[in-house]
Amino acid sequence: MSEAAHPSSGSRAATSSTSSELELIEQLKQQLARPLFAAVSYQFSHFQNTVLSYQNKLQYAELKIRVLEERLRLVRIAKYGPGSEKLSDAQLELLELEPAVSNAEVQAESERPAVQLSTKTKRAHPGRQELPANLPRVERILKCAPEQCVCKGCGKETVVIGHEESSQLDVEPAKYFVLVNKREKRACKSCEEQGVVSAPLPPRIIEKCLASDQIVIDTVVSKYCDHQPLYRQSAMLERDSGVELSRATLDGWVLKVGELLIPMASAMRQELLRGTYIQADETPVDVQMHEGRGKNHQAYLWQYSRPGGTVVFDFRLGRGRDGPKQFLGQFEGLLQTDGYAAYDQIGGPKIIHAGCWSHAERYFSEAVQLNPQDPVATAIVARIDELFAIDAEARRQALSLEARHALRQQQSRPLLGGIRQQIEGARATALPGGALAKACNYVLTLWPKLTRFPEYPELELSNNLAENSMRPVAIGRKNWIHVGSPQAGPKIAAILSVVESCRRMKLPVRDYLAAVLPGLADCPIQRLPDLTPAAWVTQHP
Image 1 (tube, rainbow, N blue to C red):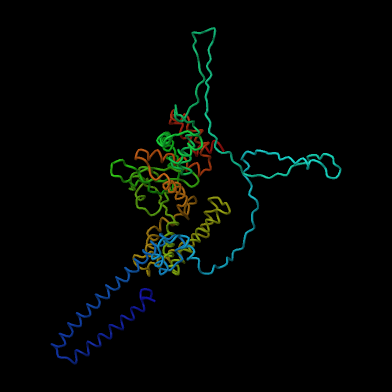
Image 2 (cartoon, rainbow, N blue to C red):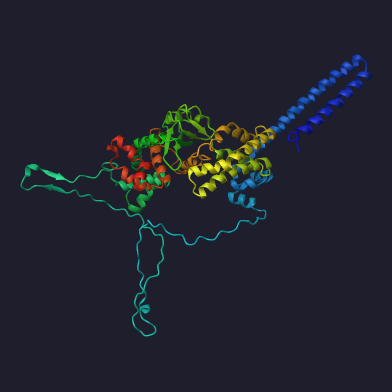
């Protein structure tokens, strides 16, 4: 065990060493002449200073090596996947020497020791899954074969006495067709001077577009819900219908829909700001700048939402404080974020900042990844897990916010003092600059924000819902790669706002877009608050 872990033993050793040095100096002073003693004393002092200098350098080098080893292990874990967390540093080093090692091999190596049998009791199988009752039913009558229609005993014809039913989920493949609109024209044969009148055309998303509204909506949903890039959709359309449409045409449809939804996103923003609780987070997205550099610019999509409610994305070219400051304005409710400093000093004077326990636990989990046998970090993670277990039990029982608040007062609040004591004790002995020290500093710095949740019933323990809302963006980035231009950014943010809000509220996005988009360009701005996804759910339960 190091002296850093037991400072008392280190101090005793230092005291013993100092006393023996003083005794040696006193003996030399008595036995040597004064000039000789002075020379020896000077050389001894110089030698002692040199030794102390080398000791300090050695201690610094050892600390630096340990920090670098932690960073190297993190890099290797990220490189070889989650299975590599179970491997020792020596095993990870051997993987570096193995050419083209696969994740499957890493996983197999990590699972080489005997697997411990789970002590959990196996739950009974819930039985055959029931298909949703809202899906239409199409019956298919299967008749008996001719020989089954005759009684084997008397030879008379049998009668139908009932049916044995079984159900399967089925699908009709997409069927493309040409929709021919014939507008009725009417005229009075007796009053020719009255002219001819024609039936009005229904409003459309894009006037004079070759494709119907459903095709336009399908293109948007396929890209931003199913993450299908436009070049792939173009190829699929040609394969299934024989119609060749360029990516530029499909891109024009998407940008037009985004342009129509920008005012809707603005109404959703006002809807969000009128509330009392917002979760915020941000994620990078590449943007083509068309400056001739051949390099994308890293912009950001800032996400603001309320749990179970509206989600609004805001496109910004940077990650500075200006983005949330402009979006939130004078908002004075609860703002829950991670530890990013850009969220500080924004909003109104009464705004209340809250932290995220998932981010706090993530730092300690990283320390456990580096040293799975570390009892300090493991114990802290276990205590934080207890907080999440209490909220999970509240969700399992479907408790109201008031009942969850009472449960937190009874069980969560008493845990906070112990968690802080553990973290303070861990920081005192942690390696400076190491993963555990960083985790401790992060939590203790944000402690006032992290301990807001027992005071406000609606406040969630973590920002996970906000992070989940950005997963479609992360998946989409791997498919559609980047945003085509800075001008396209706000339009895409508006589409993502509507799509993610519909997903969170369990509102069918195709039906909603089909009902709202046609004629939206001519809709008075005063009507938009009645057309947002949240308002639509209220009006169409």
